[in-house]
Image (tube, rainbow, N blue to C red):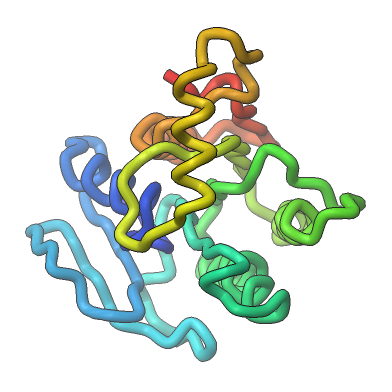
Length: 211
């Protein structure tokens, strides 16, 4: 399988990259990035791209599946418009380019509250992206919808860290859908969804991503 990975430098994306490179079922990993990767591997191609002007004619868009782990936070983005660009426009642009080259499968790291009608901006953007992807004509489309994601991030997120500590302590007492979803577990589930490529639209809810 030839796999296209968007968001390879993020928390979930870095786990996806490691798992994909180690998986014998995957023959090549294409990871378009904004800055050069330090990782090297015989089956890794990591073209440096501008996500605001993706190279639509690049031959590497033709793959067996896309897994997309692009995303940011409101604090890091600095505005709703900037957040929407990273969490909605970029994943959709990747989908458009890949689909135009015949890629049949797309797996998205979305969010547990994704809802195009939500009053909350974050959840609404995630929901609108899911709806837009459903119109792209993928034979297999999967949304992973984790809750709070556990793992070591490069950047500091004090509020998120506090929430992680609280949820870790309360974990056994909480409903499964509220528990922390480890980044590696999410990545493994997304990779398997890409490899299986089941026909239709599928959701991986938070309660299936905690172990």
